[in-house]
Length: 250
Picture (tube, helix red, strand yellow):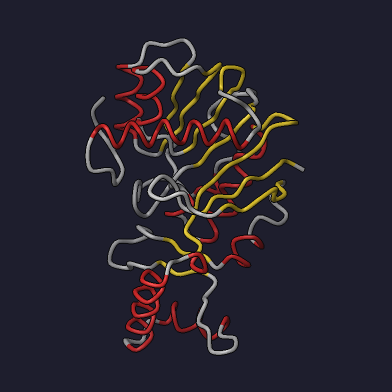
């Protein structure tokens, strides 16, 4: 498949990562595989579809949604598998779809009344500002089956290794010293015991929302009242996935 998206260096690594994510979805929901599961993948890109189709991965149903119209057009034109379906969501994202509509303006996703056993969002919250973090959780909630679950990955700044932490803090100091009001306010609100852990930082402002970092307490707080409860927060499985929440509907 064309339009390869993501940080993997080559096609084999790209596909291998997709297989690992599919295994993770199965394991996270207590399954050996996804042969009996329906999956709604928001921010789907095309690597998981490529793995399913080209490598005959067992899955009952897979529906992908993306804000990249070109990706969805490509998938609709090139994937001929009755188990798979794809939809474009014209939602705004500073990185992927800056001309789209505000996420909170969408009442439901374009999948009708279909409910899914698993809703996944890989590398989506890593590019969301706080207001869209909550809006996305609320948007996907009506589409989960009563016994279904949600898995989404994100950057949690407390989980960095020492080298990442030093780079992160150095960037925060640089931005605060340059008069960046967003970072200054975030740090002042969160400084405790000399440790700087702001609730949210768009880490590379010249590339809006390329890396959206959250403190763990704030990431948890934003889930409250969205119709989800936290089952677990898992550590990164590098290079496959960042921190990831598993949630249940309430």
